[in-house]
Image 1 (cartoon, rainbow, N blue to C red):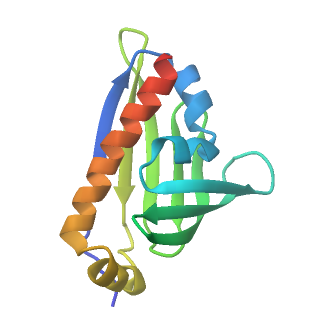
Image 2 (image 1 turned 90 degrees about the horizontal axis):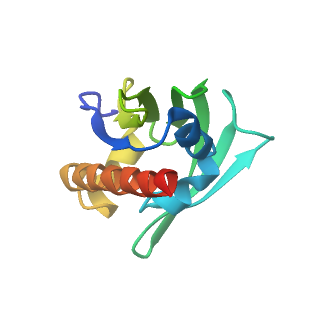
Length: 155
């Protein structure tokens, strides 16, 4: 049975760059391996990234390597990009909000509105150290990802 009581995970950061600049980086999900501590490679299937685009990610944690498939579920230029992971049903998103000083606040979020698949829960418990530990690791990874996006956008 899937895990259905899953609290969202969220992190945010303010970036001293306009939304158009941040969007230019963030909307190309092939950049994720530069930023994410877990994602090592992203392949986009079928042309430029847009709503409905399908991606394959290669993820790594220590010696463990695994692929995931995802589909872009929201693509609103300079505002939001979201994608759903097929294997575990989670939805990851980045929302951009202009700040009063001309910069951008970026919010990264992981949600599981339909829960997390039973297979993913079992693997997390047996291979990734348990649900609480892995959730903490994902939260820390979000903070690292956002800091690296900030560094790129402000460069």
